[in-house]
Length: 150
Image 1 (cartoon, rainbow, N blue to C red):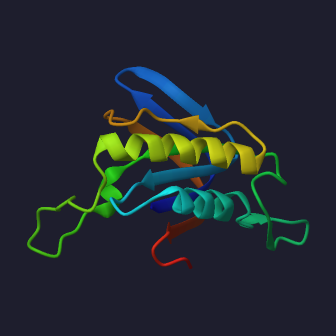
Image 2 (cartoon, helix red, strand yellow):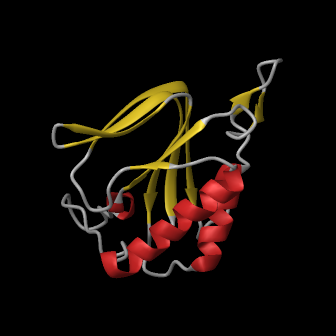
C-alpha cells in the first residue's frame, strides 16, 4: 500500500456537483493498493498513520497524533499513486490492484484506521472521478509505502 498523508486545516471531496465529504483540521490521506498487499499491510499502515505524530504540541514541536488533537480523517482512494513513468511519458498502472482485490482492502483499511484513531473516517468514493480540495497545514506531507516500512 502507498499513502500520501497531508496535514490539513480543511479538506473536501466533490463528486459531480455534490460535496461528498469534508473535514476540518486533521489528515487527508490519498490511498492506493498494490496487487501484493494483504491484511498485514492494512494493520501496519493504519497503525502507522493513527500514531503519526505530526501535529504541534504546546512548544510547537511535532509530538501529537490526530487522535490527541481531536482531528478529522479523510481517506481518498487513488490508484494513480502506483503510476510508473519508467517507459516513456504515459504512466502505467499495472502495479495497482484491480477493484475486486482493492475494494475489500480499502474497506478494511478504513475500519482499522477508525478503530485505531478512535474516530470516524470520511471518504471519497472508490473509483469515482473526484475533485479534492485542501488547505495544507505547514505544509506537512509524507509518503508511506508498506513495502519500504519506513
